[in-house]
Length: 386
Ligand SMILES: *Cc1c(COP(=O)(O)O)cnc(C)c1O
Image (cartoon, rainbow, N blue to C red; front, side, top):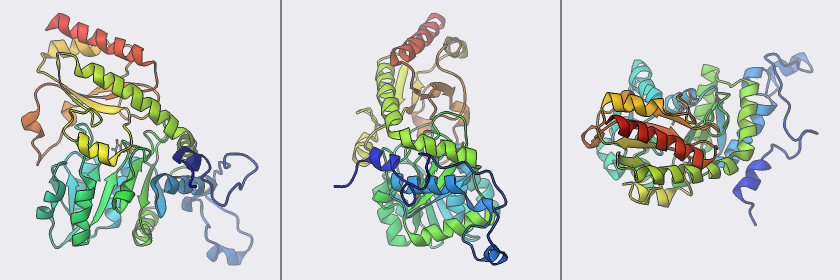
């Protein structure tokens, strides 16, 4: 009988128990000393940038997590996104990117890919099989994010994969939100799954790393060559933090999920809330897609309020004592950010449906009653002003 997800993640090791310690050693090295001069050009690994023990173990565990043929590491989530899309494109090619992609990935497409001669069209997250109309003879990649940043639309990945396969186009999915625990894009036919390990995998807001997981050997070879060309490699300490985080990932995510849902449900009952953007809520427009393609939800979601005065919003934000203000997410601590100024949209109808201020909450591992109390004081402060 095949083992469960947690068991497989905990016991994922290259070649079984290689070390007397449970965890691999952190080797800090640029230079590797080789047994002989002949080995300089014959050995498989001859330089630290090619990865050391921790990198190998992390790659093996990530392949287990996502059901991948290979995992290529990068020093951040953003470099992993850039690596994935540039590995399969060249000057003259065209990319279709989900409009709600993580902002810096979106900027990589519109600025860096453009400078490299690759054109990007942005498509609404809910385009589904309608993506067929955007495919051109030179389209090489469709870049999705499940669910999208800030607005949390969940793409219909199987429908998009179906169209892509008919046109010989590869599909990349940014899978950071589910951390690979609740969603496996490669099983749905995507060619690459990308993660900012910085978020839930590291899980403690203390390291950067990213990874590209590929479904097949041909895609793996393209990603490996591009990674090599750019010399991308996370440092051993950061790779170690990601590997350690992976072992406890399913347990942590279940706690983020339960607390996130409790807070989302509480928020949806507040009169000032226009919409809670959380795909696990039954009234979310993508709930059916989420329920079909995901086995759970993480602790990150959006909230849109009815219109509020600036003074009321200032009072609201000043009331928080437990939630912190800060970028990134996936750590043990709860965070809240206002996200209006980050919204960049060209093609979808988000701006038409938007009513009042938009914010993003990351629900950490604190006691959920304290989080709800904190939000409750903020809403009371807002009510006292408006
Ligand atoms: C944070 C994030 C990234 C980038 O990760 P970094 O490690 O911060 O570079 C990429 N995609 C998504 C969805 C993210 O949230």
